[in-house]
Length: 230
Image (cartoon, rainbow, N blue to C red):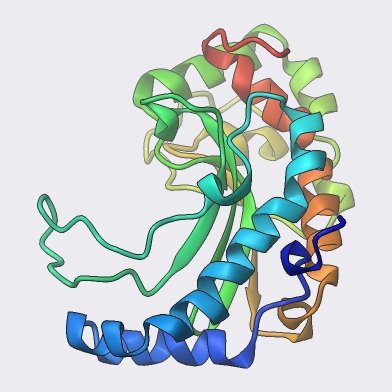
């Protein structure tokens, strides 16, 4: 990358302080007074991180929204929420295809909060139809699914998360498949407490390594509802 200003070299300790202070002072007066800190310590590093991920992520899926457009806005839309605070105290970037119903399609993400961060891939909010299709595809080709997800037992980065149905759909399914099969929503996530990696440019390589590990499963989820690979 030729432009040094766009090279991600880690977040700042001030990044976490800003988010923590914003949580205690979630009002326009405080934010406007500290807006330069937001831009320097949070917005710019997130944008640089998104830029540094772009080229590799487009190799995984050329239709992903990448770069600064992938970074969330800090301003909250409180019109349809009981939470009327003005600003988000957790920020993220979402690498997804540009579609209106993107929450029901797989996406990659990175998220930073005052005392933790996480990253992964999966559905933000899968519909019942999507998860029904997911189970159907497993039923049609269980060996393909078992082979595709064999990476999971060999790694220690990601865990499976997402609420489970109480109803057992198929008691004959082996345990290693049930953990996927019973999900109401599904995503693979690495949850981390604050550590030195967050303040280093090495975060880019660690994210890309993790994102590459789950890329075949991303493609599998993408095809559930007929989305084509380019």
